[in-house]
Image (cartoon, rainbow, N blue to C red; front, side):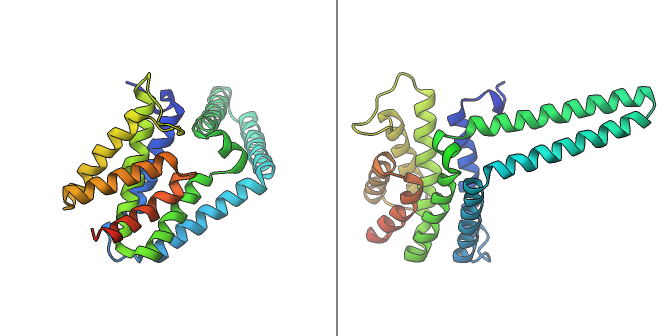
Length: 234
């Protein structure tokens, strides 16, 4: 059985993406949560974290190293006073903690895209911002945009990674196989929600094209889903 660390970075990112999209559905599950305020808080939090990563990466690294060094000194000091049998276990614990830290850092680096390593987690910020904009403009119809993020974006990435060789769409990084699969799954999702075949087909096709050709699909999928649902009276 494959562990998370043995999966391709693209798959790992999309598992995280899927989990974050599920979190965006919380106001639709727990109706007492005010949607605009909930999405606004998430957008502000994501933007703040992203800004911190952009402006202070070196400070973050220095703090991490400082905390690690303090922990090592504390453990070393304690080990010197402890009996020999216990001291060996303490030293082994320190080595284990260091390995866990290094493994966690490596996992994060594997999941980061190149532009995220240079410019922070802008994809997360874009996604939440797109949902907030859609909520302000289209209200309840935002649900369809969130589902597009959840289904279309995730499916295209999974299929592109698992189905090799594949065929790219013209002038796009998206694959024909991934887009076709995403179209079918999103179509079925809409029909399960009571949308008729004609409208579900139009929405699925349009949103698959948005995912394939938008400069930033995380930003544009949510409002596109809300807009289409409004125009088609879904």
